[in-house]
Length: 132
Image 1 (cartoon, rainbow, N blue to C red):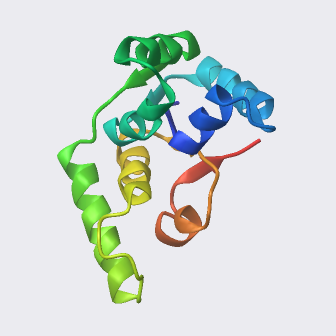
Image 2 (cartoon, one colour):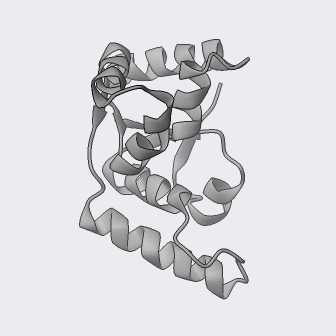
């Protein structure tokens, strides 16, 4: 079982937010089931929380998270999904990172650990979302 992780989950852990322990527990369970991975978009989103790439890489290593870049099929799915969003009246005119992250999880993992703000249910309803 491959679990993709959204930046919101990692930032909750790294910033010691109120729900950090429950997310950490969920990731430990998911790690026992298989691999934990992030795409390059998540890496970029969490980078500002660290002083250097080495610090970020070490934090990910300690969690057992590997970086798996977004592949062409996932990038395509994100683009098509963004087009649907725009056709339905979505106001944002530039690609939404959440679509890239979710498409990566849908096509390159089996599930995602994420704080769903609604985009997963609406645009990636076939993606299993794990939450504490």
